[in-house]
Length: 105
Image (cartoon, rainbow, N blue to C red; front, side):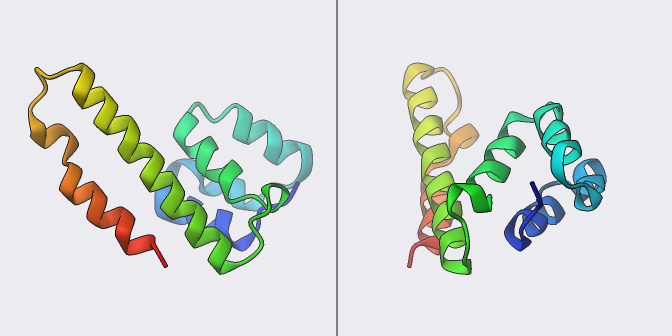
Protein backbone atom coordinates (compact mmCIF):
# COMPACT_ATOMS: atom_id res chain seq x y z
CA UNK A 1 0.00 0.00 0.00
CA UNK A 2 1.16 3.49 -0.85
CA UNK A 3 -0.57 6.82 -0.27
CA UNK A 4 -1.90 8.61 -3.31
CA UNK A 5 -1.86 12.40 -3.68
CA UNK A 6 -5.43 12.77 -2.37
CA UNK A 7 -4.68 10.83 0.79
CA UNK A 8 -1.54 12.92 1.31
CA UNK A 9 -3.58 16.10 0.94
CA UNK A 10 -6.12 14.72 3.41
CA UNK A 11 -3.41 14.07 6.00
CA UNK A 12 -2.11 17.62 5.65
CA UNK A 13 -5.61 19.09 5.94
CA UNK A 14 -6.96 16.83 8.69
CA UNK A 15 -4.19 16.70 11.29
CA UNK A 16 -0.60 16.81 10.03
CA UNK A 17 0.81 17.04 13.56
CA UNK A 18 -0.73 13.71 14.52
CA UNK A 19 -0.70 11.84 11.21
CA UNK A 20 2.05 13.51 9.15
CA UNK A 21 4.48 10.71 9.93
CA UNK A 22 2.34 8.45 7.73
CA UNK A 23 3.49 10.40 4.67
CA UNK A 24 6.78 8.48 4.90
CA UNK A 25 5.26 5.02 5.35
CA UNK A 26 4.42 2.38 2.74
CA UNK A 27 3.26 -1.20 2.64
CA UNK A 28 2.53 -3.09 5.83
CA UNK A 29 3.83 -0.25 8.02
CA UNK A 30 1.30 2.16 6.51
CA UNK A 31 -1.57 -0.32 6.75
CA UNK A 32 -0.72 -1.01 10.40
CA UNK A 33 -0.46 2.72 11.21
CA UNK A 34 -3.87 3.39 9.66
CA UNK A 35 -5.52 0.51 11.52
CA UNK A 36 -3.95 1.56 14.82
CA UNK A 37 -4.35 5.33 14.47
CA UNK A 38 -7.26 5.47 16.91
CA UNK A 39 -9.28 7.90 14.78
CA UNK A 40 -12.09 6.14 12.96
CA UNK A 41 -13.12 9.21 10.99
CA UNK A 42 -9.56 9.71 9.70
CA UNK A 43 -9.42 6.04 8.78
CA UNK A 44 -12.74 6.40 6.91
CA UNK A 45 -11.38 9.37 4.94
CA UNK A 46 -8.20 7.51 4.04
CA UNK A 47 -10.12 4.44 2.85
CA UNK A 48 -12.54 6.51 0.76
CA UNK A 49 -9.65 8.34 -0.91
CA UNK A 50 -7.57 5.22 -1.56
CA UNK A 51 -6.61 4.04 -5.01
CA UNK A 52 -7.72 0.51 -4.08
CA UNK A 53 -11.24 1.90 -3.58
CA UNK A 54 -11.17 3.51 -7.04
CA UNK A 55 -10.11 7.06 -6.17
CA UNK A 56 -7.81 7.78 -9.09
CA UNK A 57 -8.59 11.34 -10.16
CA UNK A 58 -9.34 14.76 -8.74
CA UNK A 59 -12.97 14.30 -9.78
CA UNK A 60 -13.11 10.99 -7.88
CA UNK A 61 -11.57 12.61 -4.80
CA UNK A 62 -13.95 15.57 -4.85
CA UNK A 63 -16.97 13.32 -5.41
CA UNK A 64 -15.91 11.15 -2.49
CA UNK A 65 -15.38 14.17 -0.25
CA UNK A 66 -18.84 15.46 -1.15
CA UNK A 67 -20.29 12.04 -0.39
CA UNK A 68 -18.55 11.96 3.00
CA UNK A 69 -19.93 15.41 3.83
CA UNK A 70 -23.44 14.26 2.89
CA UNK A 71 -23.05 11.07 4.94
CA UNK A 72 -21.88 13.00 7.98
CA UNK A 73 -24.72 15.48 7.51
CA UNK A 74 -27.28 12.66 7.56
CA UNK A 75 -25.71 11.26 10.72
CA UNK A 76 -25.87 14.69 12.40
CA UNK A 77 -29.48 15.15 11.35
CA UNK A 78 -30.47 11.75 12.74
CA UNK A 79 -28.67 12.39 16.02
CA UNK A 80 -30.40 15.73 16.30
CA UNK A 81 -33.80 14.08 15.66
CA UNK A 82 -33.11 11.41 18.26
CA UNK A 83 -31.80 13.91 20.82
CA UNK A 84 -34.10 16.96 20.64
CA UNK A 85 -32.64 18.38 23.87
CA UNK A 86 -29.49 19.37 22.01
CA UNK A 87 -29.31 23.02 20.93
CA UNK A 88 -29.75 23.40 17.17
CA UNK A 89 -26.34 25.10 16.94
CA UNK A 90 -24.61 21.78 17.72
CA UNK A 91 -25.61 20.44 14.32
CA UNK A 92 -26.16 23.37 11.97
CA UNK A 93 -28.02 21.84 9.04
CA UNK A 94 -27.91 24.93 6.80
CA UNK A 95 -24.16 25.37 7.26
CA UNK A 96 -23.55 21.68 6.64
CA UNK A 97 -25.75 21.70 3.53
CA UNK A 98 -23.94 24.68 2.05
CA UNK A 99 -20.61 22.91 2.66
CA UNK A 100 -21.86 19.77 0.95
CA UNK A 101 -23.16 21.79 -2.00
CA UNK A 102 -19.75 23.42 -2.41
CA UNK A 103 -18.37 19.99 -3.35
CA UNK A 104 -21.18 19.11 -5.76
CA UNK A 105 -20.33 19.32 -9.45
